[in-house]
Amino acid sequence: MEQPQPFRKKKRISDKNLSLNRKIRGYAILAKGDMPIAVSEEEFLVPSQSSDKKYKVTNISGWNCECQDFQNRQTDCKHIHAIKLWIKLRAKPEIEELEIDTNEEKCIYCNSLNIVKNGSRKTAIENKQRFKCNDCKKRFVLDPVKRIKGNGKIVTLAMDLYFKGLSLRDISDTLFQFYNLRVHFDTIRRWISKYTQIMDDYTKNFKPELSDKWHIDEQMIKSKKDYIWCWNVLDSETRFLIANNVTRGREIKDARAVLKIAKKNIKENPKEIVTDGLWSYNKAIRKEFVTKRTSPNCVTHSRNAGIAKKLLNNNMVERYHNEFREFDKVRRGFKSDETAQQWSDAFRLYHNFIKKHMALNGATPSQVAEIDIDLGRNRWLSLLKQSLNHPNTTKKEVILK
Image 1 (cartoon, rainbow, N blue to C red):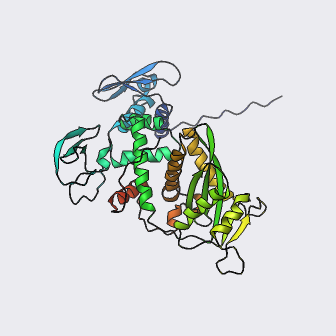
Image 2 (cartoon, helix red, strand yellow):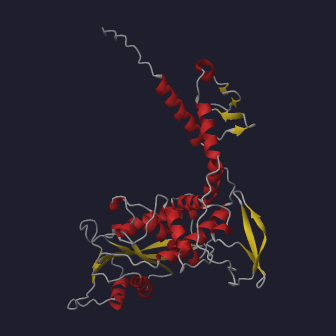
């Protein structure tokens, strides 16, 4: 006969833990995507998590909710916590305009000094001064950043979300939900296309300190209805992406093209190049580098030996290919070869200067390569400020589709 189990008194949950639990459940309402409805400044409707009912939350002389939890305990329920967080997220962010050196006011198209003020441009954040050139008759705003609707933090936030895998429409929806900003997805595309090109032009002025071993591989990407090849050259120790190039084939000339680009971006030639054994690599390396073993500047070509020999496998560059595939998955291919090249250049910028790598102990490849760029907590914003203030940076807009 089974012995009766002894009676165990249930542990009472403290008021502090109950309050924390309600707060977490309130945050879960927003995370699920069920956004509250603002009836007025003092009245809100919060959707239920278990039914189609909506609970009325008011804040007249204090917070009040018609749910049973609030009526019994007279303390902030999960619906009130959801409204408090929702109001905080919808508050407009602080404006932080990018400071750019502008010693003189001149036309951005013809560099004429004969310009006059010509109205203003109203945006969701502020009114921006517009100018007109009396020579070329074109209208413009002086600041490159002020030519778009937004501020530095919003622009760089959109860029960061995009390279982390969100689509343009998802980013537009996120800015509306959490910042109450209505930004069209095509505007976000123009932000990313313009400022990644500016930052890429700026970062090309630096020569990284690299190791004497490279990894080269090619990956297949979709362009319209066809498939093309994206070649990537990666440094072994710093994980720095030295060069990338998009071609239609995998011939010797295609392999030589990416090697020529890599040679322009370095200080010294490598001593060893690891590939996957594609036949075009062997002849391309022989034509671009000295491969005679008797020469002191000899470059050794090592073919991929698989997982068994860790020093000779090409897993490092294959890992980069996986990162790019996750980014390309949202886009579902490119519209042209030129577009594929431009977006691969933009992702190279993200990989080298923005993304932190666990294999590098939380550092970026540019930091390990000893590139002298002091980036703050917001690496996108710091890099964009430095790029815009650099005299050799091209301010020309490049549209990516």
